Image 1 (spheres, protein in one colour):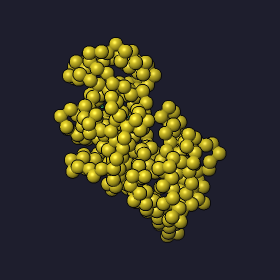
Image 2 (image 1 turned 30 degrees about the vertical axis):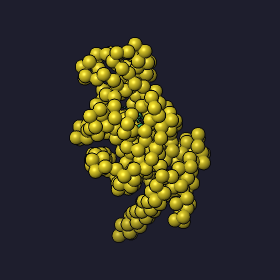
Image 3 (image 1 turned 180 degrees about the vertical axis):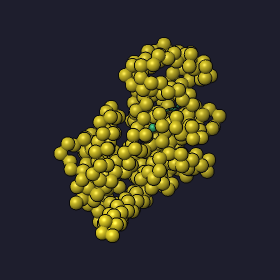
Image 4 (image 1 turned 135 degrees about the horizontal axis):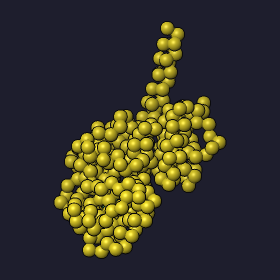
Length: 302
Ligand SMILES: Nc1ncnc2c1ncn2[C@@H]1O[C@H](COP(=O)(O)OP(=O)(O)O)[C@@H](O)[C@H]1O
Ligand SMILES: [Mg+2]
């Protein structure tokens, strides 16, 4: 029996450098932990005591297959984050649930695949001069673009192509992103761990490094911690890891952009202690499973 499978994808079968720091901390604690490609058909998941989802980025284009995999794994071993959490968090319609539970999300119009919609009419109705269009199942700013009310011809075309293929979101543009960037608060086993601020390159609004964005570790403001704590409370119970991404609108109001519970980068390189904290949380989860087994065995004997 091996201890921990760290689920990755075939683009990084040996894990990315950041998650490798987590792997080292697991090894330091005497655990037999190894990266495993999630869609490798040869893997026997029941041979692991725990599977931690970390770098399964390529699920985005085949979510159903990924969720079926999660169910299969969960049937034979323990999975973190758990399968219902992965299902809920892998489609941005979860923002609607959080909105209903009182979280201030980025103002959003949810558009189901194949639904006709005029961006001009929507933006006029909601009073948006600028909007952002994105797929509902996404990562790394895939197919994400800005639309300005004065110049919608090509944006409308691009939006229609997107919605013909998949569910999408149209959101108010959070103008604070150019100066303040996006703040990410990382939680390990439900407890706040560290925070990062990512800023876009000049002329862009996407903060990802892929588009030239920069990143630094920051001390979060109290207001940001309050928003993030609120999100954790409103979301699924007991996530092993979580990242709350916050944007500011033009007036400096904080809005939830994303609640990441599937494959967020946790940026251990900028916070080494967090990799150790995460490994400790995994040890705790493993002790939990062992204790649960002992209890179950005792009950069976009684
Ligand atoms: N409504 C918005 N206003 C301003 N910038 C946005 C908005 N939505 C997304 N962005 C920018 O685009 C990036 C990618 O979008 P995001 O919603 O984080 O999706 P994902 O990370 O799943 O690709 C964000 O990190 C942010 O820089
Ligand atoms: Mg994001």
